[in-house]
Image 1: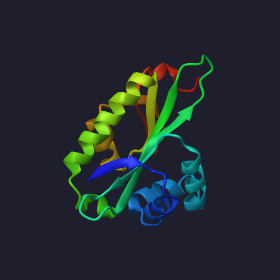
Image 2: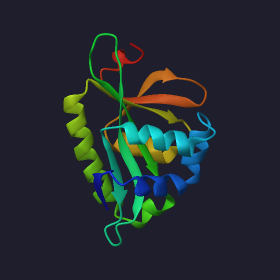
Image 3: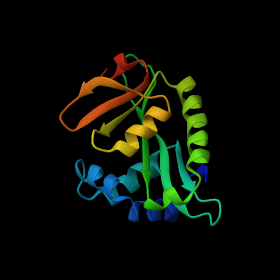
Image 4: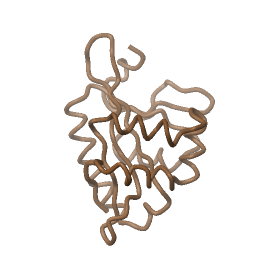
Length: 156
């Protein structure tokens, strides 16, 4: 598996059309017509990657940052990972090493990186922990914020 900048809109659409069921359930908690809205949001991002299988270059995921505004001008961003079931056909360790390297780079550029994670999505929780994210005190019945950096910037 490898990451490359996501420039090809058809690859982005392919991933969104084939998202794993856990991801679809989570997205529908926020947005009913998630495919169109997420596609438009991802197109606007400057930091977005497509995850591809080495053996056939098939896109199996999207990964990136969503910049957030803070009142004091510090840099914060939300991280996202959207995957298909075919992600597991690739070498997960290679993917995690690449993702960890990218997250470390982002941590040197941003004061806070966070994800609003569904408490029932153990796959994403495991992924976040492997990438060095910690659970915060910010949570409700269904979601918890995981973060790296200065969590005090959350909500600023």
